[in-house]
Image 1 (tube, rainbow over the protein chains, first blue to last red):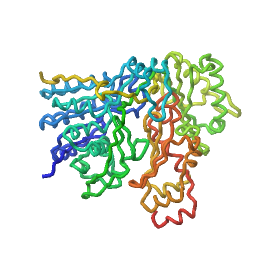
Image 2: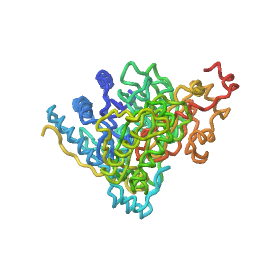
Image 3: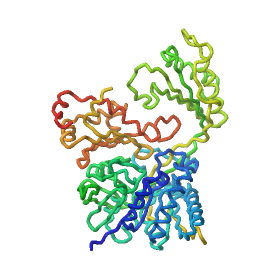
Image 4: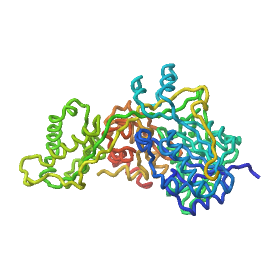
Amino acid sequence: MTKEMVIFSPQGMLGYGYPMKSLENGLAYHPDVIAVDAGSTDGGPHRLGMGIGGVSDYATKKDLIPLIKAAKERNIPLIIGSAGGSGANERVDALANIVDEIGTEEDLELRTTCIYADISIDTFQAKWKQGHVMPCGVGPTISERIIDDTVALVGQMGVEPFIEALKEQPDIIIAGRAYDPVLFAALPILKGYDEALSLHLGKILECGALAATPGTAKDGMIGILRDDHFLVVPANDERACTVESVAAHTLYEKSHPYRLPGPGGLLNLEDCQFEQHDKRTVRVTGSRFIRDLVYSIKAEGVRKTGYRTVFIAGARDPLFIKQYDTIKQQTLQEVKDYFPEVANGTAKISLKSYGVDGVLGALETNDDFPYEIGIVAEVTASTQESANNIAAYFRSVMMHLDYPNRVSTSGNLALPFAPPEFPAGETFEFSIYHLIEVDDSLSLFPMKTDVLGRT
Amino acid sequence: MDDSLMKLAKVIRSKNAGPFALTIDILFKNKPIYDSVKEAELITEQTIASLYDIQPDDVLEFVFFDNANALKITIPRFHPSGSAGERDTYGAQQYVPMLTVPIPDEFLEKVRAHI
């Protein structure tokens, strides 16, 4: 019999949901490991800055219960990466608490290894001063001050910490920020499977059924890894993997179509062969992994930039809309004249005018006359109070601004909400997006194992 | 709206590639159309520069991927994803300028059988 390993990805993001029938189908393949990604930088810098996730704890728990039970019953590891949206330490611990709750409620003893990914500012500062920090493609320029201003910093771990953790055979691994494909590649690499095929399979599985057609992250995918190829098949019978869908997925959310740099090396998919194995299954060969001379870890950090208040209004009067450009400029000028922090640039008003240029901004080429405009004013300032003050003043000016030929002297805007402004809290910006050269792929990622649930 | 590129492609999408870059994928309908687009240099770095108000040299990646009949373009974001002033945190709607890429009639004529 051919040596093979089955890897099951129940969904593209923990908390997105998945059909129970797909879970059943996936388990029918007798997986050797279940793995699921739980985070991304895509949602914005606030996840790292505020320590919040992209999905609710409710959804996380709901999705986790069947996965934990399935993995425990079969005595196979469940691996979760980039815990809680950002993969920061506190998010790993928060997920461990959810696992503990589930274990208690389901009367399961769950040996859980947490792998942490926070990097201390001091460590990063020292690495930077030693010249071991490189830009990661395009990104911010850093300085000692920007590093010091950074309030949260994580490193994207490679496959090695997972391999170390798996050697102790825990029931569950909860990892902080991790390179998504390695969650799926760790067990196969530990068991001696080809590194390039394992990582390429991981790259496909990390998005759940997104590489299928129809594609979605809210459903599962099965990977069957053998010595010289792998197969991918969606868990849901209504979906299929086609040569096209799998090849096209290679491009997803990456800067280059077939050169995918990650921790420790580059996955090169240029010469891959994608073949239709059966109606719903694709066979892949030819993935290559080119090891870096120096191992590097991608660091993601955010700094606090201030506070935000949002004001939302609608305009429907054609006279107002016709003169909107002037009205907008005049309003902004009056606000600037009133607040020194706006005049000196410490506070900013960013206007999104939906129906005009809301989505594309300066790139908008369509100048059709809209019948209504959705106005979103985003005010950012150094304190919440200042942002609130400016947003309220902006509203009162635009609401009552007099413009030529105006007929509606009682108010220019329709305000959908009372109160009309929303204090939105702290704002953040990605301040570090760099590679750190390390001697040891494990050194930045401490781990600990505890028994959670029934004790 | 000029929908010409939509005639040639089945997927035109954009998304962040990390917080500092925006990547645009165009998956053409089939091999013959893809080959023709590639050969005719229907879309170039200059096309991207004009649509996104950047210099051709600023285009980070402009790569055809034969395996997927795809063209991938990566450009820098105006500012890091989710910063103050953001219009599209995920970059999911920033492909829209690509829909206005003009396709010459003679090209459309040449590939008409494959559309």
